Image (tube, rainbow, N blue to C red; front, top):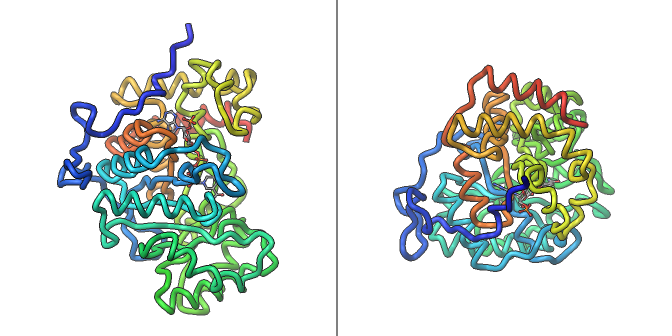
Length: 357
Ligand SMILES: NC(=O)c1ccc[n+]([C@@H]2O[C@H](COP(=O)([O-])OP(=O)(O)OC[C@H]3O[C@@H](n4cnc5c(N)ncnc54)[C@H](OP(=O)(O)O)[C@@H]3O)[C@@H](O)[C@H]2O)c1
């Protein structure tokens, strides 16, 4: 019988025994979970294998902001605080997430949690569509204003489509880096060829491309076949895996309770994976995630995230988003164990049978 979703309660880090220690004023104390950091690309950034995706902080506004339910400030603060306490030291946002409202909400939550820019990092993105590279220097002040003084550690070109070439965009990014307005440069949704073009353009300035943020999860492994992952490894560019839970599907909650799909407010419910046939196709993978979750005292989401951050050495970082505070609390614990090499391989084989892409 379908189980009711455990999902609707807000469980904050302080609610549960054995949760990460969070100080009375919300300041993360020394109880933060210890996580082995990894270097992002050729940069000097030492980051947790998981970052927090902050698209969900869009407050229902802007071009893509209605995709997720609107989160209130208390929940955003709790998600950020819980992520910090769980050992996450970086956050991914974008200009287009609520037209800057995600950046603002993130900066507010980081300040409220007592986080320091010396040890907590922000990646944001410039939106290129219907723009030229000239908009990069024109809009940087606005990005920094929205981030309320928090430095931009990684500035990414959000999409490969614009009126300018990748080379022209990288030339503008390089100028910002040289002027100390951003620290490192990344791209998102770039093909293997465009990654090469971007890295080459930056090398001409004595810089390197740090990362390519692309969709990657157990149900969408196209980057393993289209050259993006191999090129990233060859160039020493990190992959930042977005939608690492296939927008919630890999949690298994929709398989266990398909009625939940009707309650989705945004457009996710129209995608094939959420339809009855899609859920049926991916059920064998969810069953195996469930079994491994029992073995590791974990959840299926944690196992799916664990696979992502271990299946390719240290090349892949993942940025799960959270619609509720307890998602963040659950997801950070994916950094507390490591699947065995046989299990990594077995999940890859099973996912190849279930994944449509
Ligand atoms: N560069 C790009 O073009 C691009 C594109 C997409 C995303 N991104 C970035 O990647 C981040 C993550 O991607 P995403 O938000 O698309 O997908 P995701 O991380 O795969 O899924 C996030 C959603 O899954 C559900 N969820 C998360 N943890 C859960 C858990 N433990 N148990 C049950 N449900 C859980 C929640 O939705 P419900 O509770 O509503 O089901 C949550 O909002 C974004 O925040 C954004 O920063 C970038």
